[in-house]
Every structure is written in C-alpha cells, then in structure tokens.
Amino acid sequence: MSIRDETAIEVKGLRKRYRDHEALRGIDLSVPQGTVLGLLGPNGAGKTTTVRILSTLLTPDGGSATVAGFDVVREARQARRRIGLTGQYAAVDEQLTGRENLVLIGTLLHLGRRGARDRAAELLERFNLSDAADRPARTYSGGMRRRLDLAACLVGEPSVLFLDEPTTGLDPASRIGLWAIVRELVAGGITVLLTTQYLEEADELADRIAVIADGRVIAEGTAEQLKRRVGGERLEVGVGNPSQLAAVRTALERISVSGSTVDEHKGTVSVPIQGGLDGISLAVEQLRSHNLEVTGFALRRPTLDDVFLQLTGDASRSADQSVGV
Image (cartoon, rainbow, N blue to C red; front, side, top):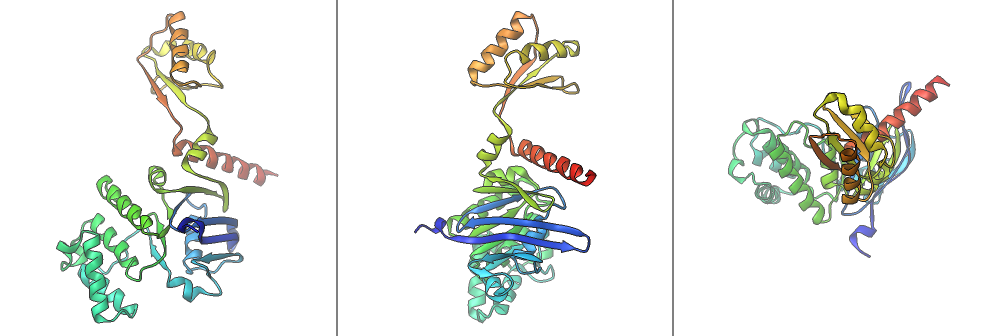
C-alpha cells in the first residue's frame, strides 16, 4: 500500500452552529496521507471553523472527524500530538530569539534540553534561519517570521499540518519561498490542509480542492477537473474602435459554442471556442469577412478565479432563492 492510499483526514457530516448561525451544514472531506487539500470559499463560508474543529480547538455539534486515525473529540489528546497548525498571523514570541522560540516549544514537548536544542538547530537550518537564529524575532521580516512560525509547528514532527491562510501579508518572493517549503514537507509524507484567499496558491500546491460556501462543500476535485467544469477555452479579442464592439460580438458569436461577453471598459469581446488554433482561424475569417479591425487576440483557459466566481456565485444565488421561499 502506498502512502497516498492511507487516509490522514476523514470528515463526515460535520456540523457547527453559533447561536442562530449554522457555520457548517454537513461537511464531508477525505484527504489521503502525503497530499495537499486546498479549502476555498468566500469569507464566512466555514473554512476556519472546519480547521478549528479538525485541530481540536472547537467541538462540533454533529458529524465526525478523524485526524491521523484519531477522533478529534473522543481522542483529542492523541490527535493533537500528530497535528501542526499555523494561523493567518505568525504566532511567535517576538521578545525571544528564533532559537529560543523553537527550544521553548521543544522543552514543552518534553524533548529534553539537548533534544530541544538539536531539533531547533535542525529546523533553523532547514528554514534558512540559522544566520538570524540568535536575533530577537521582532527584528525578522514578515517572511522570516512566517518561516519561524512554520518551523515551530514542526518541532513535534506532526504528520498532519493545517495551514490557515499561511501567506497572508507576504510579498510574492516570500510566498513563493513558502510554497517550496510546503512542497518539501509533502514530499516527506506530511499531509496538508490549506485554506487560502490566493487562488493561484491552491492551483500551485493542492492535489485536490474543495470549495465551501454557506457551510457546505459545493464542489471538489483536482484543479483541472474544476476548471473543466467552468468550460473550455475562451478567445478574447481587443477592439480599437468602441463603436465596433457590437459588430465584433455578432461576428464572433457565429463561430462560438455559446454566448459572448463584452467588456466596454477594456474594449474586448470574449467568446468560448473549440479546436484551439482552428477555432482562432475561424474567428479571424469571420472578422476579415466583415472588415472588422481588432487590436489583439488572446486565448484564455479557465482559471481557479473563474471556478471560484462561478461556483460561489451560484451558491449565493441559491441561498438567496432559499431565503425568499
């Protein structure tokens, strides 16, 4: 049996209510060991509530969940020993040095003095923090604090890591650096559940993605599977003369597989097409036959942004309709 055949996180019918608000309405998730599940959804969808329950910080009102084989309610203590958690902001003591932060955690985990120092040195080296190890954490950049925070989560060698919007506030270079670290951890067998507001982050890191809206999982699959759900390629045509937008739209709709969209501000017409270059050739022929001039062509594949907007928009409309009944 390969490492990915084993289930690290299993969630069935998870529910949570805060007074009059039902935050989770029966969440189901299954995450194989050594993989990354990206958890996406708008603010208030239930992502953080899910992470808090799975990391034993909250008790669910219904359903069940196991992490590393342990029930998060009945076997919370055993589950915690296998879990690492980072929140949206680095939780390090800024008055202590990087080394002292890690040694303190190792001591609390009963690694012993020497064991705690050795583990701290190992992690400081792994996260490229050795040169700053004896500086107070308050002198660290945002990216360095985030790396130290992640290192702190790994002192106890967890098998499951929860990353709740781990790159919030980081610059692009620091974000890419953190992605590399996450890939290395997963290659070593750690399972990651990642919540993020950056859809490109989920696209880069996640083996599978679950989209949550209104406390429910409304879609799940690989990034490519979800993109195919939105539709195929779209041809975006730039129009120099705004008065020709309508004519360009009419011409392109003759070869399109479905309806077009017009962005008057950008001066573009976008239509779904099939056949790649053949589809573009048909579009060019249509435009030439009507003597229409364009400023550019761009063949655009669906992105996770498209998936997110379509899925969460549909969910919002459904919720609005339900409220109105």
